[in-house]
Length: 590
Image (cartoon, rainbow, N blue to C red; front, top):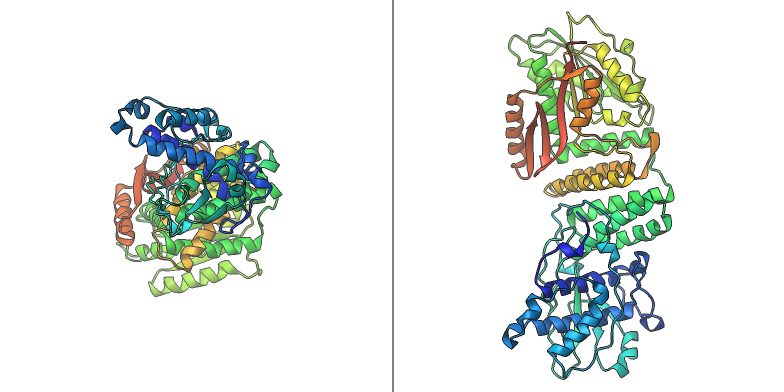
């Protein structure tokens, strides 16, 4: 969707208000201190800082003057039906802001010839919003609540031209809770490609001079925030780091006016953009792996994504192990071992008694050189003993799954032991290492598993073009953060947001082998697995029904949605799939 002001619909007076909002909203956010009262130097003749960065040449002192003319024209046109001048409200459409000032003067003189002449206002360049850049970015979904506390008004006095210079020096930025003005706002949820309409009504004493109050609310700033994020990413892609640096500073000011998911996700993306601009790559070491492991536990507790991943993968493994006396699971994503107690419980109550269960867990080294995987194995062994399941365990420490070799796994003849391989959010990390994913899939083929379960993010963050990756990731993580808004406020929720923020930072700020968050879609993974000798193993409809029931029971069914796609299961937020569980087996040719 192009960011084109020509495409929105509405009566002419709404269009005119939109130009006011678009022009005037940049004034407060361009200042370093939004809430401070600041004197304007040089008689207000300095160009607005943010607009100057974006290519505008609009003097801050003259923006209120343009707004005043629009307010006057809107008031006059509101009564055109009574005056028999309806053609002005229905037939007159002006899209080009560069012609707006001349048109305003002529319209005001026609509608009110006796009014005092108004000084012409500067030409406004809206090329940033109406350019041909093809940003297909919809509104960031979110439960953002736009409060009155996030709104400000520009208060400027309008008097005779002889006092204009004095008034320009006395302009102030203040809260719109002024006792001598009453402001009513009518606004819509911000949509990218449209402009938010904001109406201000001011009541003053007859003896006082008329004052124009323009409401700049957080909803319009939400649109500007997304535009600034996209413009910053495009500047980085074009190596215009000076422009990118200026934009990323403004993103922080715009994010302050937001609430809920939109504010959080914008803050994390702004940090990631800043790191890329200043080449401050986030750490990729053992301590970072340990922190990520802890954060993932909080993510598990906050929302259903990991629970869904574990449940659906376990159900597929349980069906594949039916009737087997000895079973072996090789887990590429051992972490805290949260997935396996549920599977052991299901095996314990299986008809015919539980099988001998062997588990091989693979994970990164611990930051303190402790045997973390052994500790996890001991806890699982205690649990297995309590439910009377014969249990064997072995942990492997590996910096990367690509370092594995089939001979390390102590495989037994397939006639005596059925093997399942499981990977949850791990395979995408191999795509930045040349030959890494091919090496791991080759090892899986040598293992000859009865089933290979894979859970991955359902999004394409591995394309060659930075701006495309940025746009897709902004959509994806905005939806994820939105889904977290319904969770109770707790330490788990905060840590879950940090967990996702670390992924955003790696995806945006890093390149080469350091960029491990290289998510791909189900169709992309299907092509990789197919070319490596694997065929889909359909996940049963019973698993789909059970997953839907458990999701509704644990989360009230609010917002989350389970979909079945060619034998795979997807969990999404409203209409957007976010993670996918798929199952694979060796094709007949192999």
